[in-house]
Structure formats: structure tokens, C-alpha cells
Length: 298
Image (tube, rainbow, N blue to C red; front, side):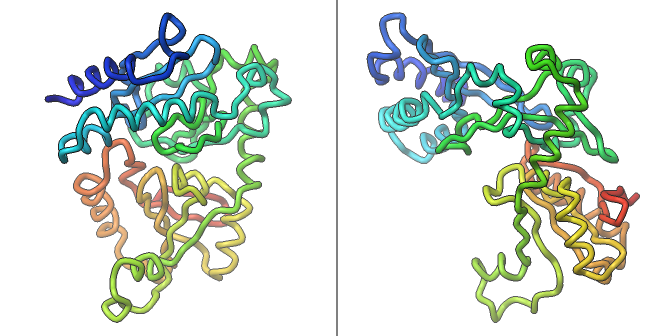
């Protein structure tokens, strides 16, 4: 059974499994493909209720993997039904979304993958660019199941008229909100010793991971200029070298650790192609953070 056949069968089962609020014309269960980061399409199930203006979206890949591992479809359908019913009102007032003053504190930037950019995106969505990295802007929605559920709404140019604001207002507000975040920096040594006996590791050598508290789309934290300037000042170096591990994190290197730019570039390309899921890839380039901001290293 393919993932498409699996998803369609689960959708049919949900029509029977979900409570009355979704039956008798009160709800719609739909299967669709959503284009995610780097133009990767993911199949999903959307469960809409007529009395709620926003609907949870369930991406079915992880559930399909459970099915392949032997879990019964009935159990999977029940698990998905529970997710839907628990998240059918994720704490976001759709009417509030129409009011800029009420929604502006939830606007944030997000660094996108290397192949996201195209003319259609440029025409439809508010965006920015730093070096060869493209940045979209979103309204964040808090949900309990943010890994599986949609947790943001991408801002289109059509929203500007509804809110009565300019593109520059969106961008300025997003970076202002980001500066209120406290990024997470952990040494690679501390991360690895959670999985490998400490005696098998080399001593901490100044390699760190930059992400956010949720470790989801944490690569965006490199746009937090105040934080990055403080981090740079603490090193005493002229630059921090930045490896784009994924859209979720960066690996930061002390300047003294970087001895072969070409070798690091090749390593980034190799790791991306062999170990990082396509939708999570950020870039094949090495970067450095200086007093002037983020710069490409070619």
C-alpha cells in the first residue's frame, strides 16, 4: 500500500471515527498535498468543522511509517482522530487575525530552504533576503502538537490591505519580535555526551549549536542581531563561522577552528545530500557572522 492509498483509506475511516461535530454535513475530511520547504510536497489530511474557521492539518508520513512497522490502521485512525479533536481550536481567534494591532506581536521571520525561492513566491508572499538566504514571514499559532499540526500562517501580500500596513511594517515588526526571543546555544560536546559515553569524546573544542527552545525552525535565530553581536563579542574573534546544519539549527565554529574553507564547503554538500532530509536543507554554503552581520564564504 502506497502512502497515498494509506492516507485516503485513513481519511475514509476518520469519517466514521470522528465525533458528531464532523458528521452529517457539519465537517469535511480532505486529502491534499501541501508544498513545504524546498518545494517538497507532503500529503496530509485536513479536518474542517463548519463552526470553526481554522482547521488542524495532519501530515501522514510518520503514521504511514507506523503502519509499515505493523501498527493496525484502526489504531492509527483513532490516534489521528484524537489529535484532531484535541486541536480543533488551537487557541487562535480567526477574527483577531484580521486586526493588525492584535496579531502583530505574533509575526516572525523564518529562514527558508535554498530552493524555496521562485517568481511565484516573490509575487505572492512577503519576503526578505540576506546573502543567498530567503526569509518568509509568518503569524505564529501556538498548538500542543506543533510538530504534526500546522503552527503558522504564511503572510501574503494580500494581507497588507486587510491589515492596512506596508511590507516594511511586516518586516520591521517580525525582526523586532525575534529580538525578544532567547536563542539556545549548546556546545556540541554537551549534545554528543547525551548519546555517547563521555570518555569516548574529545574535549569541548568550541563547536556550538544555535537553535531555539522548540528546536523547530531554529536556524532563524541567526537573524537575531543583538544576540549574535553579544555572542561574537564574547568570542573575542572577528568572526564566528556558521555551518547551515538544517532549517532548524546552525553549527557555530570558533574562528581558530576553520583552517580549510574548501573542505568545509565540500563537507556541507556531502552531509546535505546524504544525511539531511530534502525539506530540512538550508544551504550548501559556509557563512560567517561578523560585526556587519551574516556573510557568505565562497
